[in-house]
Length: 200
Ligand SMILES: [Zn+2]
Image 1 (tube, rainbow, N blue to C red):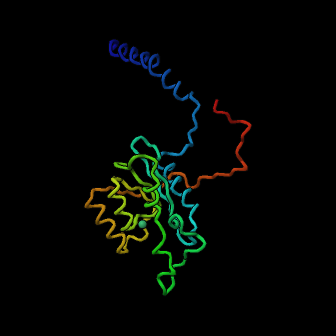
Image 2: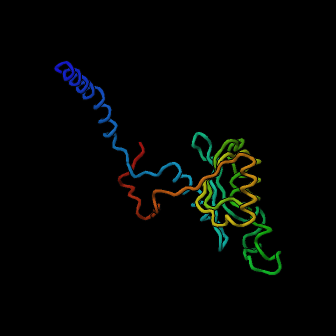
Image 3: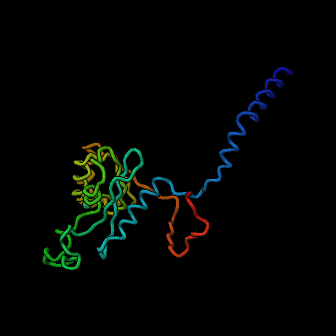
């Protein structure tokens, strides 16, 4: 019994001496606890990009990330270069299809892929708020993106989404829904406390 207690005590002292200081030093690093997770950061980047969209009804952004967690492409839905936002139509209910947006607008996913700042986007992950349509699924598959993280699948019963999933499944592209832990992310330029900030 004494031996057992003695061993136990020795182990306890060992833990106090060796393990505890290390834990304490981690806790003492002083890092913030309320920081964004990687998934939140990339999804927020996609949604921030969407704020550039001129589409009055649908603002979508997409953010492509490589396996080093580096952002390699960002895009939002918009008219092709040279096709003026002020001249090409943003409507969607016209009987004349040429006066609707659909023939003209580049979707966020396509723009993010084409805007890439790396040689390629093979094996990357795409963050996009709305589940990609069939046309974007083709771009995603052909570009080599292997995973899609989305927030809403509201058009899941539409043929374009069914076709999209049929192709993504066949090509082995994974997709999963994401719910952020933070409900809001505030960026209030007027409230940044510059006086207490320094990086060096
Ligand atoms: Zn699309």
